[in-house]
Length: 257
Image (cartoon, helix red, strand yellow):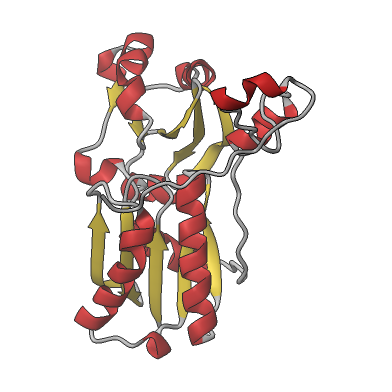
């Protein structure tokens, strides 16, 4: 059985082909381009290099979140498009659970944290592949409070380790904090594919929907009254018209120099 995994939930744009637990090929990029420019071309290139047609793919695994709102939507559109084109079942896998799979063979507690901005992280904790603290969006202090309850050395991975590493080390002590090498710190499509096959064997049912853990920033700001449905632009030339009528000014923006 051939599995195709694709992920765009974070900094990495990645795809992987696996056949019955054996990796046929993996491509991961972190080159600053948007995932909309890289994810689908990576899928096509990987299939061509592995000499596998889309018709030969039996199942597709896709990260369902949490993660970058834009990246998750790009991944969802790409995965659903391929699944529809090839009539292939699509399965959603947690981004946090996929990340812990990078080091799930180690006995230490693994804390996965993704930078959710505004002082929060998307996080969950695992030990030997089993969840010991559920997925949630919390402050780094709340995660560290849970980590302090654990014994021995603990592993931290995900893009949240970059802004919060110093705070983690100061809170727990450097001797108790383990950080992975760069190749295991972020999302890997191979981990997604292998975890997907494992969960499929355990009874994971086909189906996909995004799970953000919290509402998008625009929705949160709108609910707080800080964002209008439409931004009204008023030019200096219209200020003498008074404040009785809003003016929406059309503008032309150059696409090329």
